[in-house]
Length: 418
Image 1 (spheres, rainbow, N blue to C red):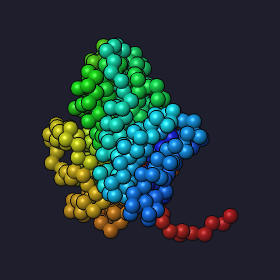
Image 2 (tube, one colour; image 1 turned 60 degrees about the horizontal axis):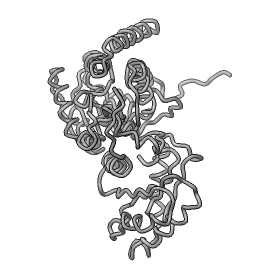
Image 3 (cartoon, one colour; image 1 turned 45 degrees about the vertical axis):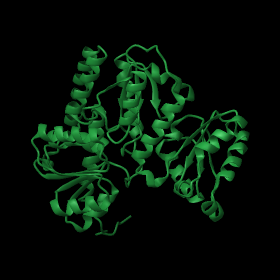
Image 4 (cartoon, rainbow, N blue to C red; image 1 turned 180 degrees about the horizontal axis):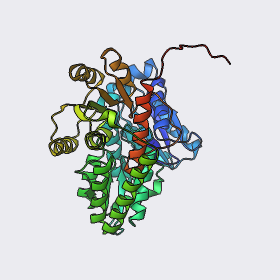
């Protein structure tokens, strides 16, 4: 969340090893090392035992040399356990610096990455978003675009922005991805909020509604993955923003494009029809995949393991299961072990998951793994969306390539003559 703010500086009040999490966040936010600065207090034994507030204060003051507009101070497990108060330190140091100081208590023991997104969103909105009585007509604020397991989620964000542009809907802010600090002042001007995750962002949308009168939209339906979900999502946007004709045009053009490309490329999926499948993913990708797998691929989802357990996401999935008249085994907040046990018990024919499931099925005699979600065992240079009709084609391409890879020889059976 912090690295999604352009030109910021992030200070980890942590042992040096925790800094590797910042490196991981750089990769996930597609951030540029030349534009964003990171610091670490590098706590050692003395600070972990006796506290490191003095070291933190000194590091914040020394950061004045960097000439940044905002400094985020993130706490780790060790300093929170011994009682370091980063809020108090920042309050004391604030008069000595000329940049915004934003402390975020986010020790690892507080929860998952999705919980971290909610923690940071709450702090950012409360500290940086001023009240505003004026609204930008038919405008939207995008929330938590990165809180999902699509390894190229930036493509999803670009697709959403392109759709809103076609409908004439201005995006006043994106919380957060390449977000200028000035955009925070515009958040309360939005008429609506759009959560781009089923794993985080619900609390932020509720806060914006209660404190600033920002109406959440499309929060009770799956995100636009697959034919059914995309059409439903687009129609909901069209109805809210008075762009019904535009929404119908996008739907008809998109469906025609997918059918035409599949016909010309000889895409065949009949070998997947009626076979049992498992979905092991985050809720953001996993819930809308259900319609795609059951309707578009005509498979039978028998096991669903989702990494988080947001109340609204559970209600959406239950509605989807009833609508499709399915009876899958569902596991919420699934870790690696719970997913492995579920796969061992249900023994599906194919698994939609990650590189973790690729290893898990080796001993389970499950033929196919379709790697769609992070962590993933392939490098993707381009941001290829899962949302929308282009997303349907991307998903089909990944699935068909993984299907063929199952039959690729793992042994060298001949000697080349050249």
